[in-house]
Every structure is written in C-alpha cells, then in structure tokens.
Length: 270
Ligand SMILES: Nc1nc2[nH]c(I)nc2c(=O)[nH]1
Image (tube, rainbow, N blue to C red; front, side, top):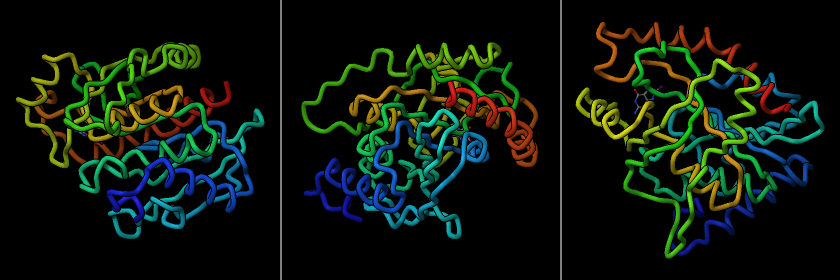
C-alpha cells in the first residue's frame, strides 16, 4: 500500500485514488460521501441508484479488509436530487495498526473526488440508559482518546462546530426525536471496562466507539462539512446490568436498519 511508505504524500495518494474512482465510474465529481459503519449497510440501497461498485483494493491507498471474505467496496450512487454520493464500505479501523494515514484515507479520497459533505456513521456503545439497542444518535462533538491525530506538523485546525450544527438541524427536521451525544473514540480493539465507561461518562461522553473522531478531524482539514451518527448497538460495559446477548445486539441492529436507512436517505435528499 503506497501509504505504508513514510515518505509518501497522503494527499497525493488521495488524489490518485480519486482519479482512479473517476476513471472507473466515469463520474468526475462526487458531491458528498458516506462511510457506513456497522448496522448502516442497507442505507446505500435506499439513498439512490448504485451505478458502480468498485472493490476498494483496486483503488490506491485502500487495502483488502482485515476480515476475510468481507470485500470492502466503494459505490457511486446517483441521488434523486441529481447529486452523486460516494459510499465507502471499506473503513480501516485504528486498531488494525496500519497508522492513522490509512484510517483517514477514505475521507481524503472523498474530498479529492469533490465531496464537500462527509457523513460518518458507526455502530457504538451507549452510556445513556435511555438509549436502547437500535437507537440512532446524532454526534454533537467528540472526545479523541486515541492520543493520535491525522494532522502532521504545525497544522493547527479549529474544531469548533466540527459536527455541523446546520446538518444536525436538518437531521432533526427529518426526525425530531433524534437525540444527540458526545462520541468518545477509544483505540480498541478491546471494549471498555466498566471503570473506563464510568470515566467516559465523567468526562462528558455519551457514546463509546473505535472510529469516527480521527476521520472527522481529517474531513475538517479538507474543509468538508461533517455529519456524524452512531447506531447504539449495545449499552456500554457496566451500564447494562443484565448480561447483553450478542443475538439481542444483532437483532436490534437489524430492527433499526429500515428506520436508520430511511433517516439517512431523507437527510441525503434534503
Ligand atoms: N469502544 C466501543 N466500540 C463499540 N462498537 C460497538 I458495535 N459497541 C462498542 C462498545 O461498546 N465500545
């Protein structure tokens, strides 16, 4: 992977990736991009017509996903309002240990492809007891506990309003019942201990996950407007008093799929 060379310019690799996507799809410019996290996969079909599906490893800087048989894809989707969306189904997680450049490459590629809006979705643990499994939550801000950053050198980027108040207001118009919360990115891949969940709560967190914060910072560096949404698939460790069954989590995610996909389709069409 070209990004594994420390001397590589990550922005040049992103430009190469965007050029390859344009070549493979015949679409010169994608207006917005979505990264679909666990539970959000069905949304791509609902937001518009997928005209091209590219195996991600055919695009510079993307790699074969860690999970065998789980081919990461990039999709070009024609939206009803005439705009084009790039749907990224090939997220690299920080815990894979390939470095932060690989984690944020998809965002930089989307920006190089012309996208001015970045929608980041994920599956996450909830700290608020009122959020049952399957609840979608808007991300209002984040706490980055990775001790890392996609920014290199003296690039001081303002992160005020990183999770666009305008896009959150638009999401609220679509679904006024949506809650908001502060997302805490842990390095993972282990889940938090109950003590770490209590710490996350004490420092102002509402959601715990292993993605999104680093991608959002890179999106802001690229000048994109960001909307982040978490699907609460489980209550974080120690919050749920009864043992959580994996089947319940899967079932909750599936039950929520149509609601969150419909929500995303309406937000994208707005
Ligand atoms: N850190 C963290 N990440 C998650 N992803 C999912 I799905 N659930 C969790 C969780 O409880 N904690």
